[in-house]
Image (tube, rainbow, N blue to C red):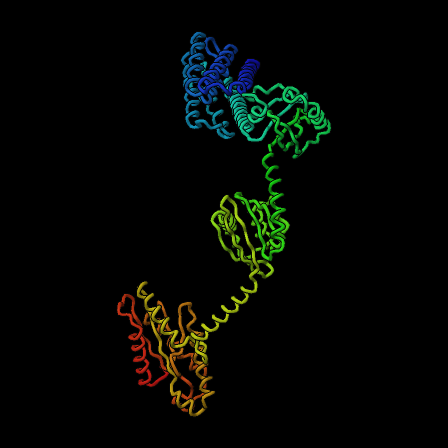
Length: 613
């Protein structure tokens, strides 16, 4: 049994190996024809496996045909599956015997499993998990056909053959499917690499150790007057450029001998019309997995236009330098691609950390990103660098003015002006003195604004600012349908306090009470203000009547707890009386004068009722 099953396993290996050898040669064949050919190879393998079957009893055979059926169905689809299934069924019927129906059932089950896997995977290549699951299921499925055998044969099959056959079939299917999938992936990758190689604008080529072209792209064929890259294969430099061939051969033999390639070698070579052109060439040796030299790969780029542009720019730079050297402002010229073409020394000096990068040929984008990375320019948010770079690059076409703050405290004014034919000029001026004067003026303005809005004695908001804030908060409360409360406060018997202790003590008393208000009205929206004389108030947004009453009570008790002596008061200490008014949620008659009037009335009631309440 085992020699025959191992022979079956070998048949699987031979058939799959044969197909793997064919795959690279079939890349140009239509998919449907490839699948049909795959079905034919699997059919031949299945027949070979059936010719070496293990015969359990007359007419009952076991082999690894299920592996070929499974592979044909999963990879080849319905066309390949039908071809292999018909072939296997025909051979099995011809073999005859008691196991014909069992064998036919096994064929149908395996093909069904394979076609199901084909539908699920589609054009995807199966991974390790899918390969393992499919190998097990497709190998176990045919065993359902064993149930159709006569009882004695069925029992003998399960006792002796089912396990080995399923095991070998699973291994064979797994190995075969993995090999086919990997080879397919390698072929696809090779096609992608070849397509990229052939369509690249640079001249790309691969040579063997004898200097023969093994692969070239379309650019190489075109520059040498050939219609197709295939026409260049097998030729040497002697066929393309006899006068340069000896020097090229000597150079390439040195590369192959010492393993050291050449990089960015500039050459002047006449084209087919005799015009001298500039080329930039790099070559490197190619090795196999054993470290032996296979040949070399090279790339050549036509840089004629670049060299001409460099010459023109050099002349322009000389002319511009004469004009711009004595200017105090920094001047830079960028082309339409954002590449720096010229700048004066003043321009570089304005940027001490990236001045060495601001040389002709440097892309503006790399300069900007380096400026942010080195911390040269401070006003670029870390999470907005890409947006800032994009905006600056776009300003080369649209124009812009920017004020840049540098790490050393200086400010620069940068003005970008587009040029009609593309590109832009950039003018940089130091405006540090102007910005410092502006900052001083702004600080003074802010101080004046604070002084205008603040009560000089208490530090609370003054009456003018209170009127503005109260009106604004009332409108906001109406819009958001929220409550708003106002607390009016008056120091009890304050005239008597002033008469007895003097005005300086009275001012201290007012400041102490103001400190309590500032401490207790600490929410972001709360407003503590001096209303006039010894009267103060608190505006409490989003606060109902009960909340405002609670705050007022806290203020009242806190002032009493100051224990400021007051012999002119029946309370013996300084106290305050408070009045509360509230605009309830949904109240549309929200007028500041009404709210103040109600609070004032409540304050009068507190005083009339005995003060300190």
